[in-house]
Length: 63
Image 1 (cartoon, rainbow, N blue to C red):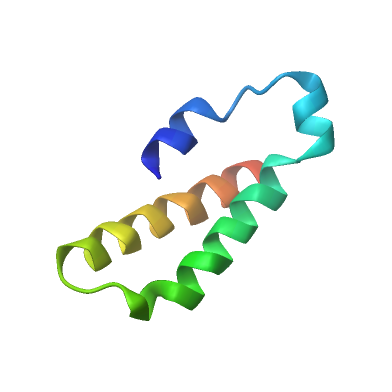
Image 2: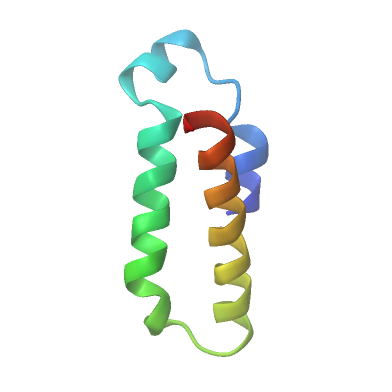
């Protein structure tokens, strides 16, 4: 999860046009929200933190 946010910010121009970061991040945040109940214990906390980071990235990049 965190690796994506570190590596993703500067994709080639073609990739950015065909698959905008905002769309990717929003869909990832949606998925995490809907499947959060499927995780238990430590992984659920980790996933929630990753979702939090994703929301911050969405706010910075997509307004």
